[in-house]
Structures are given as C-alpha cells and as structure tokens.
Length: 624
Image 1 (cartoon, rainbow, N blue to C red):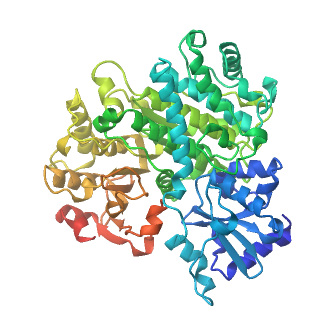
Image 2 (image 1 turned 135 degrees about the vertical axis):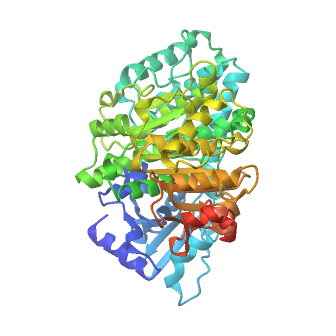
C-alpha cells in the first residue's frame, strides 16, 4: 500500500467518526500491531487477498473493523468473500469495512459461504449522521449472526476435543499421551501452514502424511524433539509402536488441508477447512482451556475453575501492565499467573511484554530477545498436568508467531519450560491437594513479581486436606499487614479464590500490581462471615478498581459461566489514608454482550473509599 492510500484511509474514515488513535495501519511498523502478527506474516508472505487489508479500527483496545481500500479490492466479489473467510479464522473483529471516497461499506466477518450482498450490514445510521457510524458499530453491533464472534474458537474446540477423546475412548490412549500426541500433530500442522517445514525435507503439500503410520510419526516426532525441545509434549516410551491404526487416522486428519490450500465455498467443521497460518495462538489457548473443563466436568465442579475468554484476559493484562508502568518500566516486568490453566493469561502477557520491549528499545525483539522475555519474565503455576502441557504448547507457538524472522527453523530451539517458566505445584499428600495455596510454592517466589494476574478457581466447601495450612499462611500474611488488634480474616466456606488474593500479596513486589477475576460474592455476600472477609481484604490491600460483571452473567461476555463475576485490580500495599477504588458496573447491552463485548467506561466509574467498604458492608449493592 502506498503512502497516499494510508492517508486516504485515515481521511476517508474521519467522516464516519474515526478516532485516529484507534486506527492501526498494517504498513506501519509498531508494537501495537503484534496482536495481528499472523495477518502481517501472511501479507509479507505474498497472500494477495490479505495484502488488500490495509488497517484495523479498534474499540476499547480490541479490533472492531478490518479495513480494505476500495481501489485495492475492485469489483472482485469472490476476493471479498475469501477475505471475509480468512479474517474469520482470527476470531476477533466482527466486521470488514470497504473504504472509498465518501463510502464505508460494512460486512460481517464469518466462515460462512454468504455472497457479499448477503453479508452486507445495514448499519442503521441515518443520512447526514454518518459521523456516528463507527460508534454505532461498536455499541449496537448490528447485523451479526448469533454467536458469530466465538465461532472459530468453537470449531477448534470441537475438533481438538474430538481428536483427543477418540484417542482415549476408541484407541485406548491415556489422557496425558492423548494430549501430547494431538499437540505434536497440531504443532506440525501449525509449522506446515506457515511454511516452516523445509528443514524436514517436506512442504505443506507433502506434510499431510507425517503422522499416517508409526514410522512416519516417529520420524516426525524425533525431528520435533531435535529441532525444538523434547520435553514440552512428552510421550511415554514406545508409544508409536503401541498405537493402533485408528490412532494414526486421527493424527493424520489434523495434518489434512483443503486441496491447493483453497477454502471450500461451503463450510464444514473439519481440520482440512482450517488454515493455521491465519489462526492466532490465542484462539488455540482458549480452546485448550475450554477443553480441559469440558472433558473433566467433575473436576471443574470440585475445583471451581473456568476457562477465561480471551477478551477478558486481554483486558486484565493490559490494565495490570498499564498500572505497573506508573511506577516501573513495564518492559522489564515479571508476571505470574498462579493458576495458569492452559495459559491464556501467560500467552497474552508474553505478547504484551514483547510489545512493551519493542516500545522501550525502538526495535522489534528478535529470536534471542523473545526467548529471554519468555524465560525470565513469565511464570505460571498449576496443579494439572494436562493444563501445563497445553500451556507449554501455546507458549512455544506464540514464540514462533511473534518472531518476524522464524527461519532457519533450527534457530527456534527452546529451553525446557517445565520447572522454570511452568511449575507444577504438587507433591505428596496434602501438598498435591493444596497446589499453589500450600507449601509447594517456595520462598524464592516471595516479592518477585511486578504483576500477579489470573483467574483462580472459585469453588466453595472444598474440604481440601491440609486446609489448616492455607489458613495459617493467610493469617501470617494478614498479621503483617493489619493492625495488631485486627482479628484473623476468615475464609468463608473454604472458597478458593480469596486465598489466592492473599497469597498474591506475598508473591507481588511491594507496590506491584494484582489483577484477578473472582466470584462476585466477594462484593455482595453478607452472610457466612463474608462481611468480615471483605473488610479484612480491603483493609490489607489497596484495591484500586473493580469491574462488577454481575449483570453480564449468562451472556457471551463469559459463556457457560452462570456464576456472577468481578475483576479486581489492586496495588500491593496497605491502603493509604483516603484510598479508594473505582467501581465500574457494565450494563446489559444485548447486541454488544452477545458478540462477546462489554463497555468499560471509566468516566462513569464511582469512587468508593476503603473506609466506606469497612464501615458499610452493603456498599457495593448500594452502588449498583
């Protein structure tokens, strides 16, 4: 795209209400484009369709409309249809806008086989009011099919879950091996779709047979171990010789692509209809995390863990790092997720740290610097072996996705993440049950992190063996922060999320940041000792912001979670005199919420002082 087209995009969008600060031009070279790394790589790799995409218009930091200059598109309807489908692989922006002189034609993005005339959106802005177009798209989300924004994640989830479950139930493969085998095939497919299999002596046209039989699969797996790392998806000895032929059919299907790499005009939820050159790693990490809770519902109920939608993880990491930057350089921040799951927060944090490093240094981090950031600045704890395997795979894939020059592939070799970046917090007996809340977390983590972020489990009445150890640790932390005559804080009904907040006070540096997604009982429950628990927590921790998601329960903002939630932001210190937090209450906005979005309007936030929280137990209810 020439410089004049850049100017045309900016100028043409002004009449539709564009904020220039929210416009990302793809021909620029800036850290803000890292979330679009797959798109940039495809354009740089010669994808003619995506070369027509010149920019993205964002709303509240998330993509809203991908932009194509009309003079780059011409009258080629088939090309517009292909662009819609390719962008739908990303699972983020809901709209495609064709920008011309005095016009902005909007189409909804989807994997469907609609013709452009069928996908065209009637924005619903009256003549003469065009200045409101982009604001109306952001707030009202007109013309979107139900659930459209989450479709690609659901497709990947269905295929991923189907492959793992078939290996387990039909082929007799145990849980850990099934996850590793599917992960290895998926990693190979990711490399193939991005044309990174050259050193294996194959290209994507011949890569489809790499897992079709025991000899090919073993050879491919040995190459992965030698080229990258042999520990990130470990398999049991002799696994390839023991697998039945049905297992190789399952793994082989993951490598299948549409003939010639062309997407079919129709759409079926099949591996060969996906193109991982365009699917961001964040989509995979969300699908992995969702799978964990679908395939183990009893464990989900027992542990109270829920997968975290990518937009919420992005919001929390961005907000946390923005707060870190007020007191210390964000590019050097160390980040911990103490209940990492499949790594959705870790992957988001890693990408954001790379962007901050780019801003600070003025140059895009190379392979060596990407590894340094990953090894030194990102840490995750979990008790679940399957989750840690998924998290490792996601971090490896993100490292490659963020690398502007991933070839030759041999330079991409990784160090072992397990035991250093990803730590399994389990031992013998009680330690195994308590996980990150017990003594398995050593003193080497005390006061080490600039940001502690995540979505800890929300379960109640857990009856964990050794719960008295959790209480003792919390009472010790509280005694260091509360006045001498303050009673020890209760943990009502043995809920799991509140202990993670108390432990975060220990793991975060003084004045470091804490950002957690929690059950909203913290704000509103009045019985069973929760009033005392809330007073103690807000007396010990400088809570700076709360997003109350109660009204958004059972919407697509957080699908499949019926419990009310909140997001807590805090500075790791005892609240100073006059301290308070800003309370944001996102309201139900049907179309916006059903597309997975919510409005976070800081200008309408209410200030609640720490003293009011202590003296008026129902203050959060009064502020609704």
